[in-house]
Length: 71
Image (tube, rainbow, N blue to C red):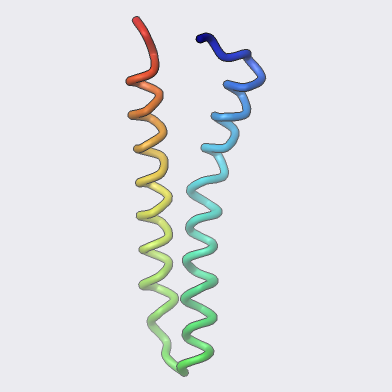
């Protein structure tokens, strides 16, 4: 089943937000945990985890699109 151009645009626009938002959320969680526990390194750990999570989501989307694409 072919998707409409607007549905495809929506899916790919979503990809533009996945990596920056997951990176920011990871940083924010780490920052809040640093403030709560009085540490100075958790923001970096969660920043990396958020970035990796964003890349995993991008890879999942690209592989799913590749398998759905009949050629």
